[in-house]
Length: 92
Image (tube, rainbow, N blue to C red):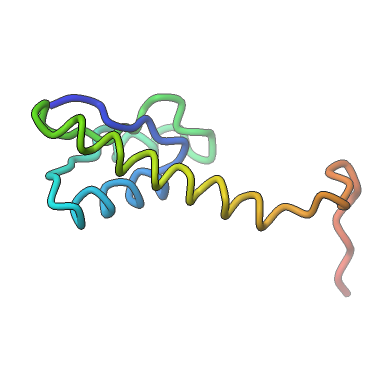
């Protein structure tokens, strides 16, 4: 097995794994259960998506597509006019 993707979060890992399996590429998430040990901290190379070595070239294309989709979604959610240091509004 070879690492096809190092995940920033467990959710990202599952998105990649699901996309690989839809492309009929077997995939396994390594380190999935280690994230409980670090709590809310970033995965920091604990979580990776593995594929068989023979499937790595095909997996790389799928991973690129998922990464692009994730990047596009994150950009769509960000508001360029919003001040990142501004306090959150208080709700009564």
